[in-house]
Each structure stands twice: as C-alpha cells, then as structure tokens.
Image (tube, rainbow, N blue to C red; front, side, top):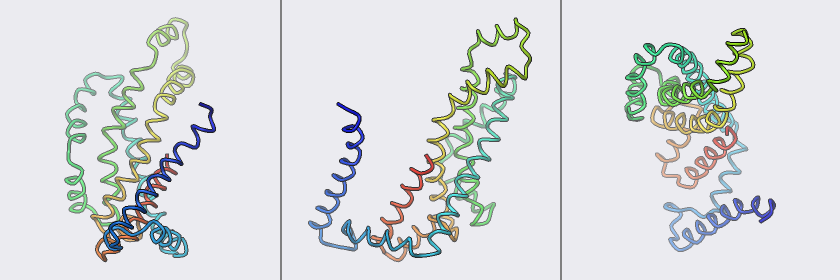
Length: 234
C-alpha cells in the first residue's frame, strides 16, 4: 500500500464519523440532544467572527504552555538531582507517587481554594504533568549509554563536552515525542480546570457557558476547537 493511500485513510475515518453523526442526528431528530453536523459547523465557523473567541483560545494556550514549561523546568531540575543522588531520588519518590495517583478533581478543587479562578488552571496542569515529566526525564537520563559515559571519562572528556555532545542529544531524542504528547495533554487539563473554575476568557469557560445555557451545538463546536488546539500543540 503506497503512501498516498495511508495519507487518505485518516480522512476517511473522519468522514465516516461525520456520516454516522449525521445519520444519528437525522434519526433522533432532536436538535437539542444531537445537532446536525451542518448546523454545528455553521456555529463553528461563526466563532471565528467573534473577537472574544480569539482571546479565549489565547488564554487557554497560555495556560497550557506556561504550565507545561513550569512543570518541565521543575521536573528537569529535580530529575538531574535524582540522577546524581540516589538518596535524593528516594526522598522524591513518595512525593511523585502521591502526585501521580492524586485525583485530578481533588487538584482542581484545591487549586480553587488556594488560587484565583484565573490562576488555578496553572496549578492543575502543573500538578498533573509534573510527576509524568519527572519520570520521563529521569528515565531519559538513566537511558544514556553507560559505556559511552565510561569511555568519555577514560579519555578525559570534560564534563561540559559530555553534557553538550552526549547527555543533551541522548536526552532530547528520548523526550521529544513524550513532550509533544504531554503538551497536547496540557491543553485538556487546562480546559478542564478552566471549565470548573469558570476562568473567564478561556475555552473552558466557553464550554461551561454553552453547557449551562443548554447550547449543545455550541458545546460540540467548542469541543472541536479544543481538539484542534490539542492537535496544533502536538
């Protein structure tokens, strides 16, 4: 099967999904429960004519990116410490386990208690992403070829050159795909936090508002926007 056929297959699956959606909407014939694809896409296109829509997308994007970068920076620093010190790694282990198994809803409610509605999505994203990023970064460090490290030390390679030519390329190649996936996951987390916190000028707030006003078509349209934003991030 050639590359062109492989490229077309994902679009065929999307087309099939839209057809099933249209058939379901026609069979149910209740616009409130399941609006037709045509009406939904009309609402989706109409969003691009609203100035507050762009501000909402920008707000969610900032929440997702800044929270991800903050979580990554902290995870990287602590993973470096854990890599060079087993004692430090053992000290961090219970904390990362607790953060990893803590329910996301608990994090959201605690963030609302401690922070403003506008800032709580940062904490939600950061707390959920941090243990995953920490584990990935530490795994990337542990995956660096031990033989190359030993050989570099035997030949007197400086630590600076080892970091530049050995550690950074190895870690970057290991983390690249993980970071892309987690960045799109950060969008989902940000929108969840925004919806519950009612953070104004965000996609999450628009989702919550459309749900409260029983606007199913708008709800699906904003969901499509969230999906597209996640794809763009990744």
